[in-house]
Structures are given as C-alpha cells and as structure tokens.
Image (cartoon, rainbow, N blue to C red; front, side):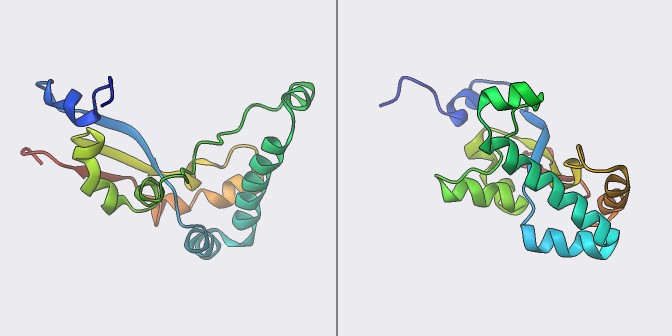
Length: 148
C-alpha cells in the first residue's frame, strides 16, 4: 500500500470544486497537420514542422551544448508513453472527461498544444498558424460536477 493519497482521496477531503484551467490536449499529428494545411496553407505546416523539429533537435543536445547555444530545455514530458491510457487521455478530450474523477478534477479547460506551439518559428509561419484556433483549436471545457 502506498503512503501517498490518490487524487480521488485528496479530492474527497475538499469542500470545493477542483478546476484545471490550463490543460492541454495533444492533437493527433496527421489530422492536425491536414487541418493546419487547409486553414493556414503550406507556410503554416512548415512552421509547425520547424517547431517540432526544433524540439527534437534541442533534446538531442547535451546540457553543455544547450547552454553554449542558449537553448532552453524543451518539454520532453508532453507525450506520456509508458501508460497508453494516459497518452490516450491526452489525445482524446472525451476520455479526459470520463477520467476527471480518477484524476481528481471537477472541471478542465483544455487547449490544443499545437496551436500554442508557434514560438520559435519564422514570423510568416507564426502568422500562417494563427487562423487555426478558429476551427479545430477552440478551447474545450470538460465538467464532472452536479452543477455542470
């Protein structure tokens, strides 16, 4: 038995709702890229690929090389993979909504990761990515509460 409480056990001790107001879901790459191309054109896809490739490149560098080149630590934890159910939860907002009690949340406001990943790409590519939030990148609100 673990000495730590589960999220559900902690939540049961509280008398207020738990809200995650900064959740991110992971878009399924092929579908996201197709939609990005439809909305923003080839420049948007190139910008998105530059961001993704920049992350891979930075993660392949040693800490010393990143320091020398002044490159920050990239988010390596963004794609859970040991537990496939956790990965699926990050990919599918409906599964997240089903697991809110298990995770210990009442509400989750989630945003797509890809639409937020425009940093570091060329200005024309960033601009080309901006239309995406009006379609597939709208925030989604999931709730599991008697008040919802």
